[in-house]
Image 1 (tube, rainbow, N blue to C red):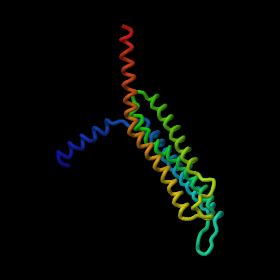
Image 2: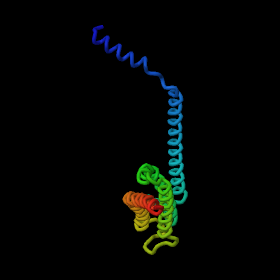
Image 3: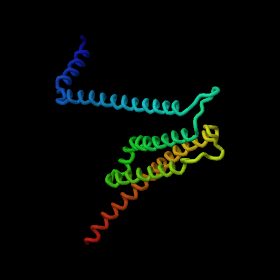
Image 4: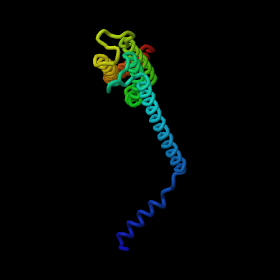
Length: 205
């Protein structure tokens, strides 16, 4: 071993000897393993729910449809009911899914007054679901349209696809507007609180 190698070895070993193991290292490793197991369990549960929903949808389509002359025939009200259920599912699933990724953004915008930020997010969620519910109620059909046939045809398929596209557009526009307006609202709240704090000492004088 050369002199340079010996010096490097001694320097590295000195730092290694001086370093003390973390007292909670084992607990942190166990916690990390437990968190990984919980994440895997949640992933399996979500996959199971998706598989069950797809299976239920296929069962409904199979049970309410007939196959004649190489064509799958379904009555118009069945597709209308399926589309309505899908719209409700999208509204209930996409809202929390998008909000989960926007929590850090909202916390940064309302870091000066987090309580106000929580109230704003709660009120925004209520507004979202009211708009989603209104859209679903406005677009649902309880009676066959004039251009529709007794079984599902191109005209009804175009209408149902338009309903799905409409709710996706509403969700995108609302959350896009929220992303743009939230910093402005957070800034206004911060300025109002700062002005109130400056006016209180002036009033005391």
